[in-house]
Amino acid sequence: MNSLKSYNTFGVDVHCAHLEIIKSENQLITFLKDHPDKEKRIIGEGSNLLLVNDLNEMVLVNRIKGISIIDENDEYVKVVVGGGENWHQFVIWALDHNLGGIENLSLIPGTVGAAPIQNIGAYGTEQDSVFEYLFAVDMKNGTKRVFSKEDCQFGYRDSIFKSTLKDRYFITGVVYRLLRHPMVNTSYGAIKEVLKAWRVSDPDINDVSRAVIYIRQSKLPDPKIIGNSGSFFKNPIITRTHLEKLQHFFPEMPFYPIDNNLVKVPAGWLIEKCGWKGKKVGQTGTYKKQALVLVNYGGASGREILELSYNIRNSVRDTFDIDIQPEVNIWPDMVEAH
Ligand code: NAP
Image (tube, rainbow, N blue to C red; front, side, top):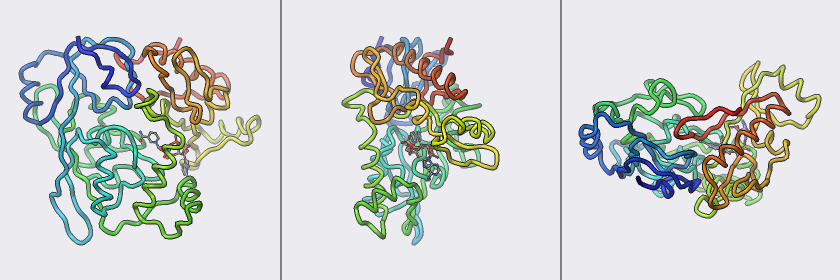
């Protein structure tokens, strides 16, 4: 059995039947053909993962690297990026080449191969705005396949790789179209405030990236110091009727319109309002600056962190009649709260 402690940012110590570090598409295809009947799972950087028990499956770690320009003109540069590249290193590469489109996604943890699965997004930008297509290998038979943007069925933190094709494909590379003359997106209040405080009146992509990094570092713990997997829960979407009922009791409740009928509510605010912010329970708890982040202060088991998440979910349900759903993947399988 191999330890997965250094392959998940919660730093939970569980084991798997076999660990294979994948560095190339050929190695992956050979491995899949050599082990046709074994159950397998894929890990990128394990930054969106809670491991609760030992795994009977083989674990494949995506470490396929490389960033290459495949096409360019006066307007854009198309790059193919290895699925095992660190996302933020790719953002830095883009900034170093003066290319825009992903600066708002600075410091999002995880690999490039994981980015389309969740359609990562932050501060008003999502990765599908620069996505072109991706290369993947079928985990069942080692067959290669190219997925267009339409094939991926991107939604809010969602894609086909989270539904009908969940765990089916290993993403070996992604092609992005970065812009030579980007329009910066400073629509989110937090970015505007930081740039104003820095007296930056005409921000470029580097300014926006610096602002995002500053905001994230000021409220999120570094997993190298305190184990965590970023936002543990998704921001729930509720009806306006539900919101109006809640506003009688919580007039200050923040919300963001989705359409005429639905609004998005920050899960962190709900959790904080239930008194969980900065609470420590054994070796686990919520982060003192952001209640949405569950942390491992050292030595917590996956089971303890899961129990804490159940207790938080129950509090939010009892107080607001809202069921907040985990954003992180829970392995072996999600065990429902009792
Ligand atoms: P936050 O900035 O406190 O915002 C909480 C919620 O309010 C989010 O759902 C956000 O929507 C929404 N919101 C805030 N300002 C908004 C505006 N001007 N217009 C519309 N919606 C607004 O959230 P946080 O948890 O600290 O996260 C910061 C950013 O990182 C957010 O954009 C969040 O989505 C993103 N994030 C992404 C991932 C991921 O891709 N896996 C994980 C964690 C956080 P949005 O979610 O639409 O931005």
